[in-house]
Length: 293
Image 1 (cartoon, rainbow, N blue to C red):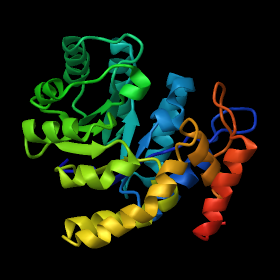
Image 2: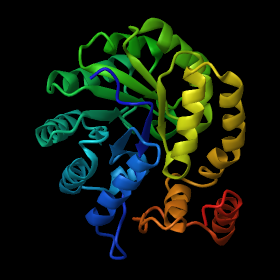
Image 3: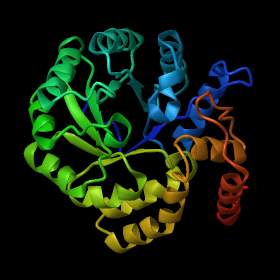
Image 4: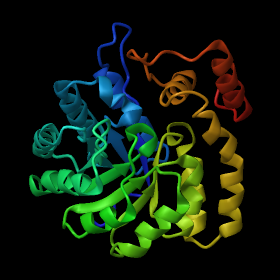
């Protein structure tokens, strides 16, 4: 697969009021996202509250979203964890379902050294033929996958991309510089989409695209068409919303926004909770401002 697309939305997982997964709502939301700016979906990532999903729920979500949009968009399974062998097994089972790729978060809590990162991802890559995205998010994992390690991993034939959420543009530029041209570097921060495109990134694995996916597509299209002024103007327009989506822990704001615009994002599983009244008011005010509610 040459590319997964420019905008991959890290999809929320809808829960019923009894906290069970609402698979029908997941299928409906997937269709909505693909019709509104998403080239692909990442299922059961951190925005999908993967930490509170069990293996069976994840597999059923992968299957549900594949059935709903797999012929129209790329479906990337979130199969990473801090347990290498558990990640191997889940990735292999996701592959059997027919997903288009898998995303593997850097091991959290364990805080492996760089060689530990390399061996973790290599072990998973050796166990599957799926194209794989490494997900570097030090703010959640407490450890940073360095550019040199990403460059080594990019030599493996089926490690084809990284979602870079370190917030360090110099680090992203170094990854672009030291990996093959076909290796895809995705922004992991909505607010850094345009800066990362400017240093050689290919797109964004997005939270905000749940709500502003079409506008983000316009921004990226303008950039790749060399209409830099238009891309900058859209980026400036969207920055307040990007910030709003992180006024508290992701995915609390975005799932709230999804519900407010009339889609069914459902409730949250503990330890996540609904937004405060102040947070809710801020989200409502912005959605009113952009005529979404």
